[in-house]
Structures are given as C-alpha cells and as structure tokens.
Amino acid sequence: MEGGREHDLIYDEITGTVLKFTKPTQAAYIVDFYEGKPILSLGDPVEYLDRLITHNEVFGQFTSFVGIGGQRYHRRIITRQPRVVGCQASWEEIIRLMVDDLGFTKLRSNYGIGYEESYGFIRDDVAVFDLRPANLFMTHSGLLVAVDSIPVRLNKATRAAFST
Image (tube, rainbow, N blue to C red; front, side):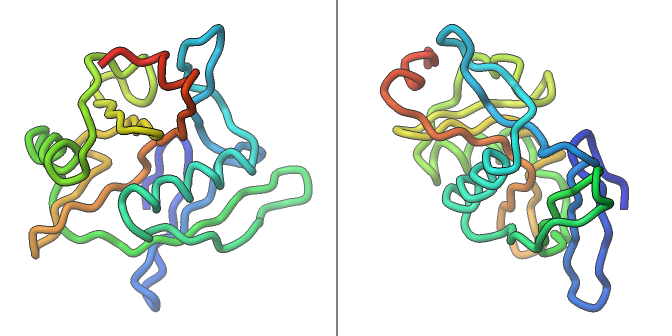
C-alpha cells in the first residue's frame, strides 16, 4: 500500500490488518519543545512508542506494537492496525469528534506540526496534531477512526506554550 512521510505499509490479507514500518533508521515524528515553543521533530524509538500509546489512549486501542525489523543498520519499528474501510472524514466531522465527543479545544494554529492544512487540538494534559481528512476516516457504520495523529503529553510548562 502507499505510505507517507513516516511509514511504509503492507496490507495483510489473512488478518485484514495493515503492517506499518517506520522509514529505515527513523522513528517517525514527535512534538518537542524548543525555547518553550512546540516544534515537529524526529523522535527516537521510545518517544515514537510513547506517541503510539498516547494515540491509543485518546482514540481507543487501535495500533499495536509488532516488533523491530529491517537490516542491522537500517532498523524499522513495526506496528499493526486494523484496515479502516470507509471514507475520509470531513473537517466538520473532525471538529465534532475532537470537541464534542472527546472534550478537546481546537487550537487557532497547528504550530507547523503535521501537514500545513491539518488541525491541532488541546485537552488538559495532551495535545493532538496532524488531524485532517487523510488521517481520520468514517466507517460505513458511522464510526470515526483516527490514524497517524501526532499527540504529545503536556505538563504545566509545555501546556503554557499553547494559546487556545
């Protein structure tokens, strides 16, 4: 399957799931803070796995860790998620899910985190970025499913970096 900037994908017909491989020697993107401001940064493997755990906490258990693969000097983190069948969510559906259903506040800016046109949201101790129709799908049963968000856990100092 076609991947993106962070992952290469393989559809496993037997299990009906998608195997996601980080790009060789990379661990995908995370939100970091530089001089009190949020920035998009390449994460290390532990930061990337924390990102996946946080995504699952916000949106429900969806992505699971499979293991480490690749060649000796070109390692990849491998995860698995169910294949989502449906259509891309609308901007209005994204806002409804995040604000009405999950209790987030939409940020005025995405702070350059994720794709340019994507949205960012904040709630208590977590912010979620890179939400856009390509990363949120409406299943045939009406369930909204998020994939590839870029969440970050916040403490008092990092939360202050965001103006809502």
